[in-house]
Image (cartoon, rainbow, N blue to C red; front, side):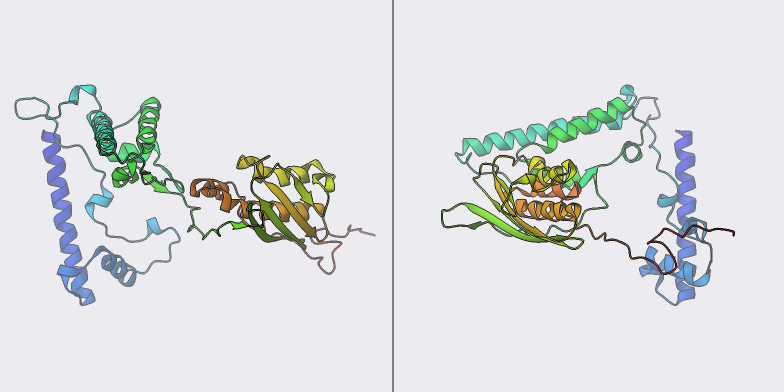
Length: 332
């Protein structure tokens, strides 16, 4: 109790000094102190105290006390020595409270699903919760949120519970709650518009794409309801002699479990078997987007199947034997 009171008084004092400093900055910048935001504070600090230090953490700053001083648990006992929290004796009350909340929300989703079925609309497909492009926050971040230290087993159990909860058919109802414990991946980009499948004279779906790699250009056509035939320049996959080039062609089909389910017809020209196989691989991957769902497209993007490879041969430099190679230096 005494430690909690001391900490609360300290935070109040820091907050009082912060508000005074913010008011002084607003007066110096000629702005209204009542509407002086943290962004205005940062701009005023940069203007009034210019610094050439490279590391931003070493430059002058004035932040809210909540951003500088870590949060601490409130007093856990009353004046009679009784713990406030009903799960205090578990030694991690916030962790087990979160687990209990997950169990309660899971039962609520089950009751919602039973209500939908009892109304006779069980054929309605629930909205899918799209989690690709994000990941669960790491253990350290969860410890900062719960203000408790967790073991690796407890963290794994929590993530496993969240995974099961997010796989519920109606988990989209609790999307805001789930996304509090996920973070966006740095490599995530906006989802591109995927073209719709076309139909040939026999009604089979197909998709075409023109791809390139270095100086090679490939026109690829992927036909659904196939038997796994791969045709390259009117020959089979043995058009390429190297095993590495053959694996490049098969990898997109194997990644999407499409081997033996679609036919591939490709026409490629240009020099270099590596560039030719790379162009065909990109063409197959881009065509397969129209055959799979959004989750699989995101998995393909994260695997690098939908990225164009801009690398080309580096030009020779004058006065050198090659792009990087130098002539042998001889003293005499």
